[in-house]
Image (tube, rainbow, N blue to C red; front, top):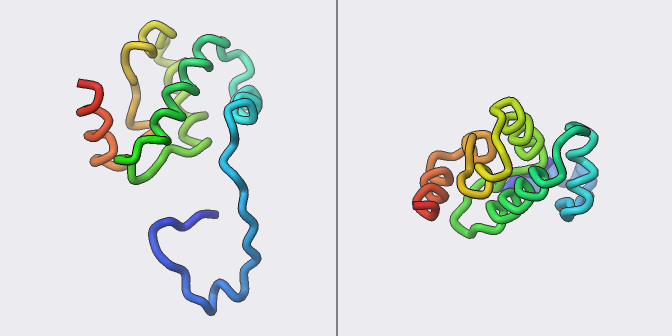
Length: 112
């Protein structure tokens, strides 16, 4: 688990084993997504990953989207019938990826 919000007490940490897991690179993420969405179109997945990793790199984002949000976002895009062209021009269902109002506002202000 990750806890970027607050420091955990030393007494608690002494009872834990720390194991760092690096965030998945793009190819690993493709493999993860394909497990959950085996029929996602290649071009849509390419656009999704470009947007997703772009969001994760923004310094103004406080809560970066995780793998779970990515998988959910793809489901929303597919259910919504969002095309690759639409995704290239917009970021539909941004609330699936970003959970803080300030993060959504920061991205929206960059897009306008």
